[in-house]
Image 1 (cartoon, rainbow, N blue to C red):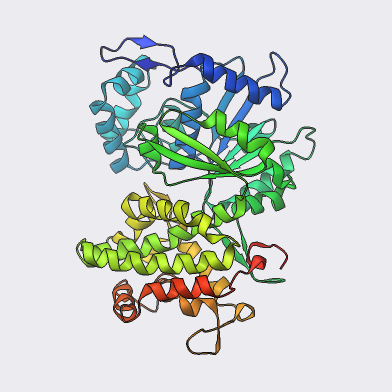
Image 2: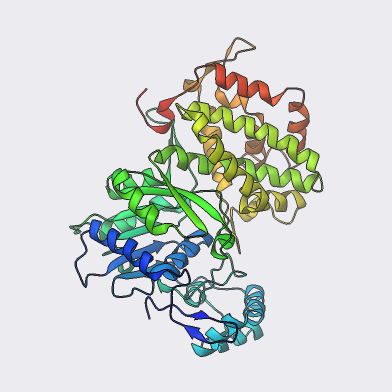
Length: 466
């Protein structure tokens, strides 16, 4: 039943309460948001997540845990495509996870859902990703069981009357899906709010080179005004957030919506701040994925050498600081959030993992950038986008030492090397170490000084007037 939450105690008894506690305070926040959206008594607030990767699924599950008890006031659902099969190896792992968690095992038995996992473990049945998501298992994160979710596989049914849509899709899929959604919204009277969790980017070269972010893709696909589209991101690992490890994030966008939404999303273990600078934070979320792949390669190739990883970190952060000076008028305000997001991604993110697997030979580029059990590796397309953008001749600047015009990418040798490894495939993964060895002849501090002492800011890169 939509909205029902079961919290299991050690002995298996059930309490129908929010796992967050403090139901009164949660209900007040929900009522405030309902009021802002003009919801009348008895009119249910409809929230739907679009895309069921790790972060999208956790986000929906957190909302369900917090507000699902108020089922007369809110309905929380998640859409994912139907038909994705769960392979036998994953089914076996899933069976082990279920039997190692007493509360999960009891829940499935009580819901008469356990037998299908036994059959799948034996190879007598094929499970589907949407089927297991209903039981609280995200295909990209099976070792972290979530609460049961209301899953919809028909996109039109999911979004046509949604008040709040949460974009949990990779950037590479966002435009296509929201173009389809726009057809279902042609007859809408009310305008939905959209919260995007996606961190990838695309590059566009006409009329001037500029970055296209997922919120901009949504805006162009649907015609929804940017004031109704927000971005939420931060230095977070989805599974750890659901397990209530302390985390924080920022929701960025128009003040009318970001402040009440920050209140609704805030939990004791998940602090949500708000900020007006939507696009820049969104771009920074994509930038760190670029360098995380290289960090994974360095870790694998040097057998986790702390010294080598620190050398890489010094150089990649100097490049990121240089790039932020191109993108932001006040880049120093981004330093903390960008470094925090980069740090956690390098420690445990899927992009760093992907770099490691490539360097170890356990994955290869021909397998693509959508990896079973991990989802989309967004850093790969981001490498191509940032390289394409920063190599454009119209952005040429005077090299401060060589006194000649160069494209910005010429001051980003790590980015250039990742492009040659991942996109053109001219180099093997070992090329990242050679780039480091070449670069250690120059102090990364010099690149930061160049960025700080020269007027490099290019507002056109974010589609803003010069």
